[in-house]
Image (cartoon, rainbow, N blue to C red; front, side, top):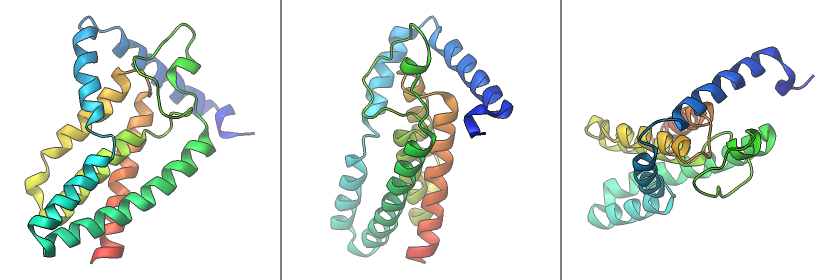
Length: 180
C-alpha cells in the first residue's frame, strides 16, 4: 500500500484542496494575481546568487561566510527538492482539480514541495544565521512567496509549508555543518 492510498494522506489532501479552493475564490483575485506574479519572480533563484556576489565584493570576509553557507545550502536543497518532487509525484492543482487553470505555467510537472518557497526560506534563513536577527523581518517576504505560489494556482498549501520547512532546515544544517 503506497502513501497516497492511506486514509491520513487522503484526509490531508482533502483539507489541502479545500483551503486552496477557498483561497482561489477570494473577491479581490485580480489584484492578488498582479502582486503574486511580482512576488513570485523575486524568488526565481538567481537574485540569491547575485546578492551573495555583491555582498562578497562589499565585504570579502563576511561575504565569503555567507556565500559558503548559501552555496552548500542551495546544493543540498536542490538535491532534496529533486528527490522529493520525483518521489512524491504530486500533481499540481491544474492537473489534480477538474476545470481549474493556474495563472502561470509551472516549470515542472509536480508540486510537492514548492521550490520557490523552499529557496526563499533557505535564503532568509542563511541571512539570519550569518548576519543575525536583523533579517528576521525577511521571513515576511518568504511567507509572501509561499502565498504567491498558492495564489498563482501552482501549489497547494502543504506544498509551500513543506517548502518552508525544508528550506529553513537545510539552511540550518548547512550552516552548522559547513560554516561553523
